[in-house]
Length: 445
Image 1: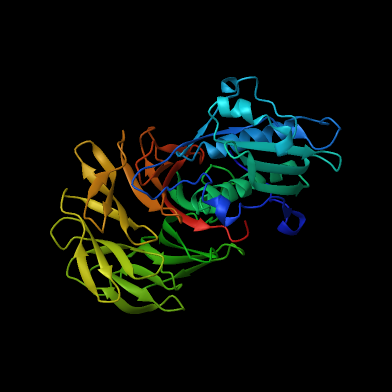
Image 2: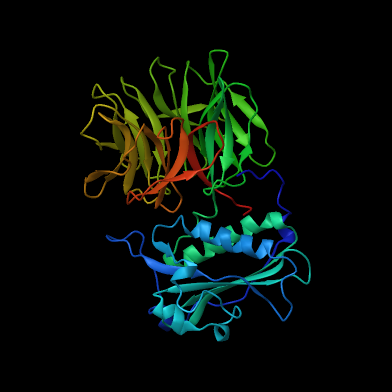
């Protein structure tokens, strides 16, 4: 799905808080999901058919129905939710309005629904008009979240739905950044690769570079304003820095012959693997994107730095044992710890924001697969299973979702899973090869 029109500026997109979060005493009894616990809860949710706000019927039904379908589509990405179908609701799926007084809670309770979402639309001011979305706990028969929106164009519906889903996920889990995030990735057409972005649902896909060369390994700055990447053009390697707002790209010629996997640290500095001494080592760059000091020097190849959110741990890949393995550097003590012991080819590390887990690619007899290592326990498990090759894992800002690229469809596409290894979901990016996903937060979301 592609959206080419720019969404109307945010000052035309009015959002009013309509509901309330339960008081602390009641909140203890509320439905909450611990997505980071040893087990994963699962609750049944139902999105009711839209209702008019007021006495007037809908002028047109396309917009209200689109809101409902997008809500279901978005929430289907969350493996801890189960969307209940219309036919499962005893007595029919309809509600007479969006308020608690308009809901027959008993029929939803008998239908084993845990949470109900209602949608109200007032089209008197235009299409799609004013929208209210409310979430109710069935057992307590009370509203736990309510939002109101004024839309000036149908193209704003997808963003509105993502906004509500972000708030809803934050209510349930304490983390809503998944729906506020955006993925940068490489998109290949012929012999050229450019940097593109897409949201996790496959919407709002945009081309950011038009360099006519090979752009690789994008990585976001923490403020969401810049993307660092490698550029191969005319047999030369460059560091590319893209300003997301202006779309301006600046190229930097660094010492040596290679520029591999530039990565922003939490403090805004870039770490990159370059070879000024004839071998790829990991260096800090200064604020002008010039070589500063080494982070990791070794006679072997050291590449692919990845930082936790506090900048205290850096995962990287190294050939110091003869074959590529994953290591982690404690930046406070400068101590290096080996992470992987199995396999002969372990690459592409991505450390979780809390610094506890490392997702990485391992070559297996069946192809490349994504594995997860728990740094606290040393336990390791496989979380992707092909077919084809699964590569380039990247932790989302919430530390729960993981994006990766896979050739399971015959060409490389982007997929979503979780650190629990839930069934992968395709992120639509078009017909071309898509690889190397990297997460960022949309600050203007």
